[in-house]
Length: 405
Image 1: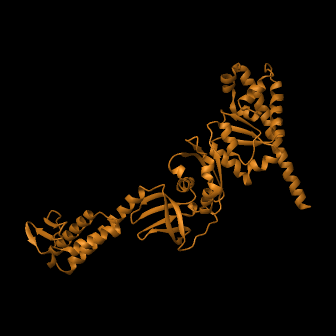
Image 2: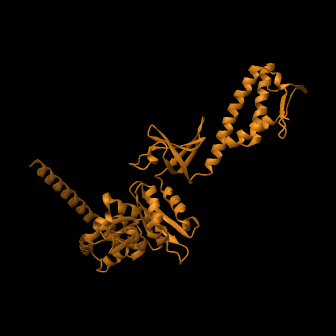
Image 3: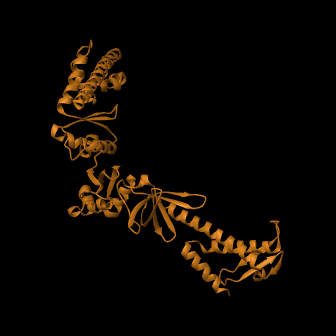
C-alpha cells in the first residue's frame, strides 16, 4: 500500500480545493508523459497506460501490455512528470477557483487589504485567492491600508489565460442592497423588499423600501432601534448619506417621498414626456435640489421620472405664458389650458415637445386645431429660448464687467 501517496493527494485536494479524482487523473497523465520521455515514444498512439489504485495508492504501469516498474524510469522522466503535474494542478486549481467564485457573483466577501497596483486595490480573500478592485469601483476619497479588513461585492469573475481575475466593487448600487440584506434580517427574509435604489457612491444613496407584511414598518425596520442598523451601513460606507423612503405604486406619492427631506407643494405628471413638474416653496427649493443637484438627480433615478423643480412664481409664469399663447389661437377654448395642465403640460416648451398627437387622442381636439396649437407653442418657445439666451449673455457680461472693475 502506498499510503504516502494517498496522504499527499488528500492534502493537495484539501489545500487547493480540488477534487481528488482530478488529482489522480493528473498523476496518471504525468506518469504516462514520463514513461514516453523515458522510452522516446513520440507517436501518441504508442500504448502506455498508468493506473493508480484510489484506495491503496498502488501504481501500475504497462507498455503495450507488458508491466513496467515506474520507479526505474530515471531522474529526467521524473522531472518531466513533476512539471506536468505542477501545470495540471495549477490548471485544476484555476478551474476550481473560477467555479467557486462565478457562483458567488453579487455576494459580499470579506478580505484583507494587500497592496495597490496601478490604482487597483488588491484584496486577499483567502490564502490562495486575490481579488482586484479597480479604481472606479473604489469609493472616492476612501483610503485603505495593508492588513485592513474590508468588505466588497464580487462584481465579475473572469477566466484569463494565466489566472482568474475576481473583480470587486464597493461603488455598485447592488453593494448597498447586499449590505441591507446582511444588516436587516427582514430584507434577507423577503419581508421587506428593496423596490428601487439610486446611488452616487461616497456621497448619497436613496433607497425605496416596501413591506409585504402590514405589521412591519419597512422604513423603521431598515433604520433600526435608535438608528443602529442604518448606522452600521453608513459606517461601512465611510459616512455616505442614506435616505430610506417608502415605496408607493402611485408615481406622485413616490416622487414626493423620493424628494424628502424637501416637501413638495404640488406635482404634475406628464406621461407623454415621462416628466414630473414639482412645485416647492422658496424655503424648500435648496433642499429639493440638493447640493450640486444631487437630491433631485437621485430622486429622478429612483423614480424613473425626469423631475423639474419650480417655485410657485416660476410655475405660474409658465402657465400664464402658455395661457396667453393659446388665447391667440383661433378656436382654442379657455378650458384648454386646464385640460393641458391635467396632462402635466405646464409650458409652451412641453406643448411643443408633446406634439399634436396626444392633443387629438387624449383631449379629442380637431387635428387642424391641435396643429395650430402646437405651431403657436413652437413660436412662443423660440421667443422663450431667445429671451433666455439674451438674459444669460447679459448676466455674463455684467459679471465680466464687475470682475474687471
